[in-house]
Amino acid sequence: MKTEVQESESMIAQLRKIRDQIDNETKDMTTEQVVAYFNQQKGLFPKSYWNKTGDLKQENN
Image (tube, rainbow, N blue to C red; front, side, top):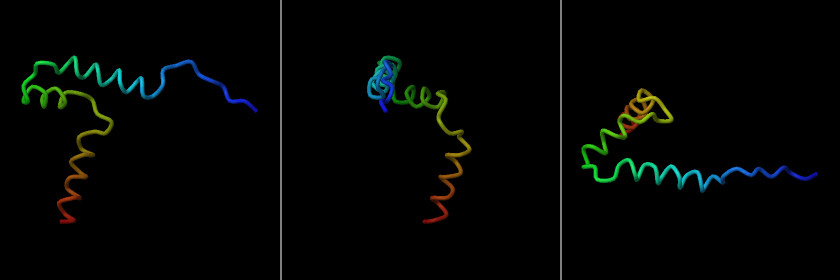
């Protein structure tokens, strides 16, 4: 049984495209502007998730 070959971009090509897009958008920004840029971007997890994991790390220490 043969598998179907998809003619779409590879995962590496997609990641490079995202990297280049971020590079172009953050070019000539100060550190504070870059931090603000990433705070505005939608992440994979909501901020409440990251705050929760940060709290768990502090409890374990």
